[in-house]
Length: 278
Length: 239
Image (cartoon, rainbow over all chains, first blue to last red; front, side):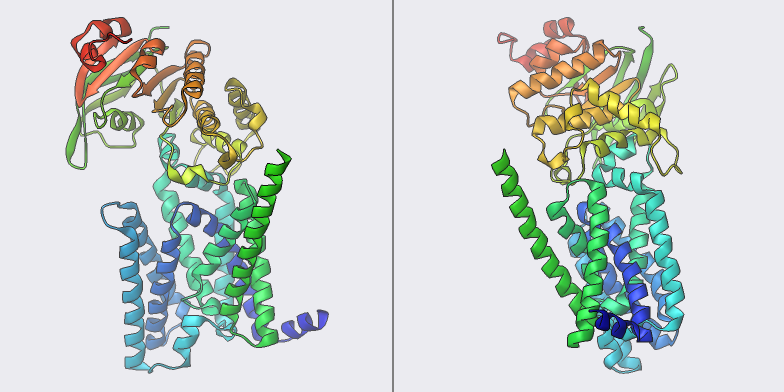
């Protein structure tokens, strides 16, 4: 075990990925609880596809990926939120349209400029090699900002998640918090996309929240446990990819899926035990 | 005691470009218990949302009188599907009622918020459920928790939107008893939207019958004698 760990940490690029990845997993788990409970999971998925388009644009323009993608995805988050709130347009259908359009744009831009190569594949499915030195600083700053904002507004985020109309009626500015959550999600998706891949990054948001809800029953315990679950799954996934040489993003998703099954079983066992005790 | 608390002047509201509330006028005094009745789509819930500022008012004015502030109003919304299986403990939900009084930048709850939470739990007789998870409670208990949250945020006025929907008759009566107690013992002014005209008449002291416009506004006994009341009751023979 120790050997594996020291083996992992002896590589510079893995150290960078672990640092950025664990911060992203933490943030994604925090935001995921709210997104899943508010039925906004599809926004995360939609944003990751927009992120792919943005990455392709930045590659074609030959500029740093984060500086282009962050603003584009933030703008997209703003629109997706408006679409979801507006019941007249079918929100999920609109998100699906935007997702596929972004991917198509990204693929066309790339094939016209650099040609479809391994870079594109690494954007779609992620790569531990993707985090370069310049990205690390910005990624860490963005993730820590997300965590601080989440802690400051934790109570308000709970109120808006549980019952938006009550929160609004009693004087909480719900619009600001919905926008805030969408913006933070956009930031985390862009930062996490390099390691996890555009197609897989939304799992970081959705899995930990759902997993912890199988067992935990209060909002605070769900938030804390999903952060822990997310971190553990990320480390296990990266370690597995290092040992059996599987792609990093996909390995993290599979570990998350296994954890979900485990917690579902645990939840069922706890429930039946509870009923018997009664 | 009988100071006016709320006054509506020619209030009209629309929903999906349809006029659902038309020229509503009434005045509510402190300590009143008003029940708004009417058929589905008669604008009862929309009017409540207008008073809370959740939906825009098209014309007319809603005045809060005698120093009543927006954040002194408590609200019990209709339950949404999202809430039924929401992982949250009773404490967390009830104390979130206190948020309205705190400013934008207040990350944590104060001790006075906590004592307010305990007080409203006690008022509704659900102290023992404090650590329970919301999604494991019965429908009646869930409704009590939401009422406790409304009490936590309300100092003077409570707006209740269909508080007994989906509850069985026994639990419904308990809810009505609790609301009555809040009104009489704790001096809370209450506006309740209800389909249940019989218990409305037993509990409230004023009736507002809406059908977009005001069909009737006045005391319960006057309502029974009025045309609107008789029509809604089908003659009133089975009161």
